[in-house]
Image (cartoon, rainbow, N blue to C red; front, side, top):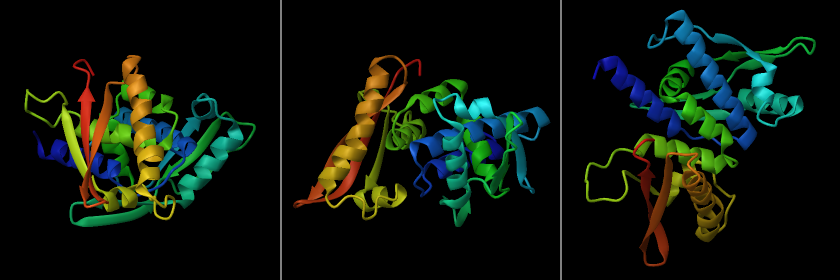
Length: 244
């Protein structure tokens, strides 16, 4: 594996593990932008190169609205993407930025102009490189923001178990504090039972439904590790279709 491809995988993982809280619509808008960045860099032959300038995109409004979104919802989503912080830990470096720096739309035109900060481009580019058309379609079909995040975790860890005796293909583990931190669940749920039901359980149910319907290559199960009554760690087991 080349040095460049290794770094790309690390940046892909870094964006998956980033700390942020985006709504379902905001995540869908971000997926469209990721796809557009990948297409733009592929066309220009700049895939794998470190960008030094912000990237200006011109995205058709129909791309943004086709997922049952009204233009007003797209405006709100892009506004949030330009305001909400995303914190990425990339090796020894921590980056705090925004997904986009600004957007502009003249209502008589069929395009929305979006500017992506250059500091975000390595991570978006790495994500786009591993975000196939099939994975994009699955991500856009997921109906909850937590389902989207856990689908991305499944992408990262879905084939990292090399024990043929295991029924699952991948495994990952978070402390409860790590999960709360990554998903910005602070002060949103008073008890772990609520996190288990509304975040983990809901995401697991949605991905399993899509998996059973043949529309998603991954789903997961999980176990709680406790010290007395307190939950300390969460163990996740990723199941993957052989053709996924």
